[in-house]
Length: 376
Image 1 (cartoon, one colour):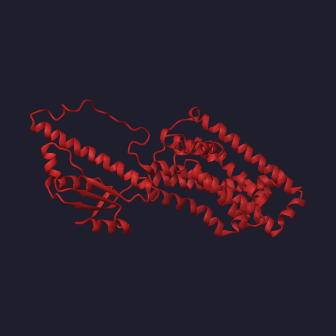
Image 2: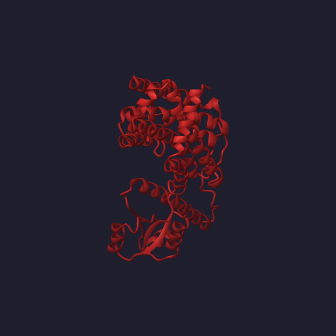
Image 3: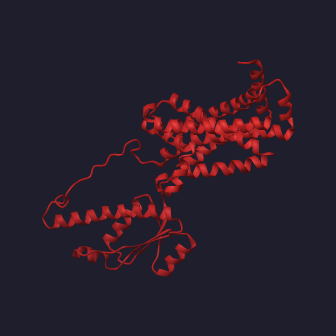
């Protein structure tokens, strides 16, 4: 390594160490984010406050209510006796679900007729309401199956004779369907991009604010050495953050790691160049750190939304789906989740690696050209 470049990199590490607050943020923030996402950002809904209006008060109605309560998704907090009472609970947000069991619930079931149960959901959050409705459909299917079997047995027939087929389902890669396994690996992509981008961006903008960028230009240090000197420390810090996040995910949250750790970090280092390029590009347009942070937010927010980090790309409008092909985070999320949960190798990731590599190269070239123009 050229001695000028080596000393310039050492200078950058020392400068980073002179800002202990920033160093604490970039080292501690990823771990805090991972813990928050691990405990909070779950797609599984549990203990939803639920009101029950049981006008039948029979053994069957109580059995149905027990089935709802034992599912773990519903917290049967309120028993109401009138429509006005449950309307107040829903309006105030104290309850999100109401189960209304009519007076003739058991009578109709015992006579072979269909009995109705009214369910009222708070639809102000449509996603939550949809998931809760699917939970109730499963509970109803299990309850109906038990009723039908009981009728068949009382008629002297085998309870199994009414079942034309059995569906045996096997879930691969995430048998317990834990959303934690889906969310936590994706934090690696976010950490790599965010940390490398933020450190590169703030380092360059600080040089502009202090007026030292002009001093760098007149020194013997070449432009490419300035670029490398500004890029290598952020990549190093981002790598340390990723290792910390990896250890938390594996040791604390017990996320299964079925693939190659070396492959994960090798592709992660390549992906971190995206953050470097974007951070460098932002710094060429920003006059101060406030402008840089605003631009950072403007760029990161769409990436998080359109990359499939939380929302499935397949459910987006077709035009928006086409836009996601230009987001490198989209590809790296698939890579991270595939290595963690599926344990696949490079052979099955090529379709994600080559478009990510093209986008990364384009971003880096654009940022370097822009930087050279500013230097000139």
